[in-house]
Length: 290
Length: 125
Ligand SMILES: C[S@@+](CC[C@H](N)C(=O)[O-])C[C@H]1O[C@@H](n2cnc3c(N)ncnc32)[C@H](O)[C@@H]1O
Image 1: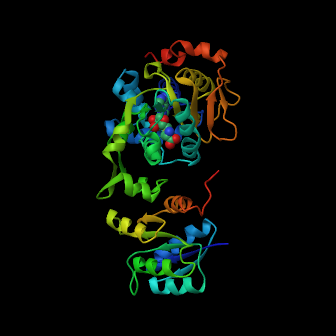
Image 2: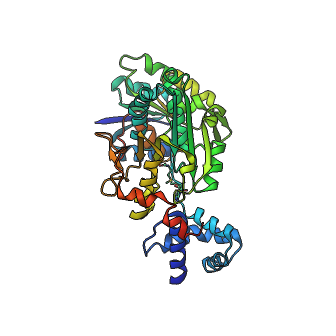
Image 3: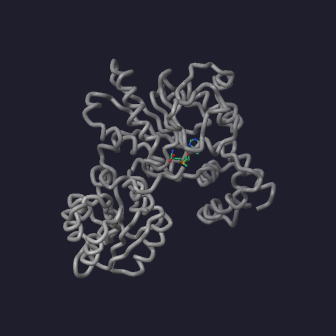
């Protein structure tokens, strides 16, 4: 890959998905885009870049999707789901006793393991939630992972990573080597394509936001901008859950860590400087020409 | 020391399982069928049993029934590891007192995940 092609791709990815590649990630681009070039019937990355420069929106979208990392599994890291069951839901049962509804957003839901883990957790709480209206909205940049998430179909390998066998038996139906989560659980999760770089205020306000293992790919300004907008999309007493390698500390004061619960944050009520910048459409999205 | 009894009639499977479980800090003993496994449990109850289903002499399902009736036999965490991948087999195993269930083929990630599930392997930090 020529250095100008690499620079072109780096900038394009940063503008379109936030992916912040350092100067030495040629191998990563090659490992993801060579298979895509073959699929598109072009000779290599050079030609792919030519097509992108020619303005082929479909190729650009495919390149952006191919460069996303979609790795996920059921009940990933366990602890966040314990927070959900033992802290978040019990607190909301009290705080929302009046309106009896809870809105949950998986802001990078990938192939669905995270939203369905939440749906299963809720089902397992049983009677405590009877009569409550619970919404789970799963969004992702990639249309491909959303389709898989909607189908709720997983391989034998996928259902064996993180999913307790009792829950497999209870909530899945077997179809040869594949396992499909029950229609009831599928019905609990709504899917939408959404780029976190773009405005998401149309989704409304949430009580719980899971935004895990996606901000790690972004640079600092992008993270700060997204935190600012996440705070606006959240009830003042809501909960934010980040991935194991992510934090707000040192970046923003619109969220503060929840004492003694790793990965759990709440709005601080602070209207930090970063929020003003976040009021309009994010700068990055404008640059990307969308 | 955590101990795991690996029960499988294939020496290759036992070898692979041993390597993975030793990396997860288990001390390993092996048995080739349910009867050998039962004898091993009578002389020393392991912390965990990784258990194949189809084996000569005594199969894994029958072994599990006997194990759970031994004094102290409710203690070991039993993880099935078998090519019997149907929902009916899984349900039967759980009713008979299995704690987890691995559908073959398996790899290190799956074994680690399942032993985390039964509380014998810590989550990665
Ligand atoms: C590693 S997965 C994380 C999945 C899940 N949250 C978890 O923790 O297991 C990251 C997901 O973020 C999505 N993603 C990457 N950039 C994005 C963006 N700008 N907007 C929305 N989603 C994005 C990817 O498509 C991918 O599915």
